[in-house]
Amino acid sequence: MFESLSERLGSVFDRLTKQGALSEADVEAALREVRTALLEADVSLPVARDFIKKVTARATGQAVTKSVTPGQQVVKIVHDELIAVLAGEGAPDALKIDNPPATVLMVGLQGSGKTTTTAKLAKRLKEKNGKRVLLASLDTNRPAAMEQLAILAGQIGVDSLPIVKGESAVQIAKRAKQQASFGGYDVLFLDTAGRLHIDEVLMEEVQAVRDIAQPRETLLVVDGLTGQDAVNVAAEFNGKVGISGVVLTRMDGDGRGGAALSMRAVTGKPIRFVGLGEKMDALEVFDAERVAGRILG
Ligand code: GDP
Image (cartoon, rainbow, N blue to C red; front, side, top):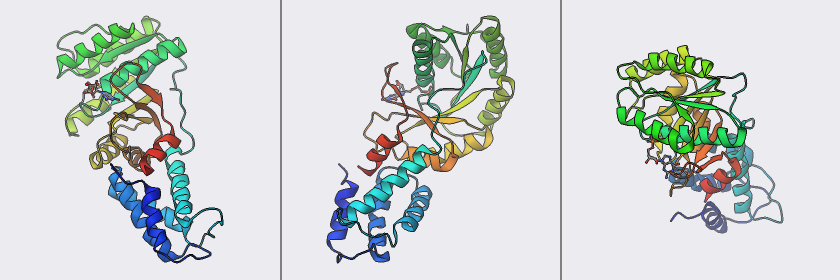
């Protein structure tokens, strides 16, 4: 597996002479290791670079505390800065779903875990908050995806909008809104179509749906194991659709979770939840502290 950051830094500082303050050379040598650790954790290159700049500014000239080694001190500075970026102003852990029916728009690439996450969030709202939830799939190109959402809805005991063949995504969104109002639902989840890559047609469709649906929340679902690609996806969705938060899936895998840092840095939007498996309960509120620890190894 990966060498932990403390181990990497320990060996760098062992080679350097002990001084009263962190010198520029010490910090530079250490931050080369930090950069490698970030890249190994799948943080995107520009994000890693920016991050290193911030840490350099904070670390240079800091007095080395007697009780810790210079390596430990740099690890602490990096750790604190990671938490600062990851947590931001403090992400709201609850979705904005007052004034029923509130619409939550789910966006992301195909295979990111969008449908699974939609059902997980619905289950959570039903069980933890006692909300009446309606699910609707807008994936008109993939009948199997629409079926999958209906099956998951059945499993978790929430309603899904009956599937009508031949409707466009916008037509489904309108029907879902009406059903949510007339049916007295608290929350409507719209699971939009995923594509393998970002494309114009997809973006225009999502924009049209957004304009009709007027979502209270727009959540971007991103596979936490994808590295550099995830950044482009996030920038594109945030720029063209506007997101209110991110859900990172597959955080149960072997990855170091660097996508979390990239997402935060690129979109400025909070990471709200993480997916930790295929089961319907495998969803947790994002914990900056835990992910920072994992990125550092
Ligand atoms: P969509 O195409 O974006 O709607 O993706 P799906 O929801 O169909 O998910 C694709 C696959 O990823 C399915 O097999 C899911 O069970 C799986 N999946 C989704 N979220 C997670 C997660 O957090 N961890 C793991 N290990 N698998 C997940």
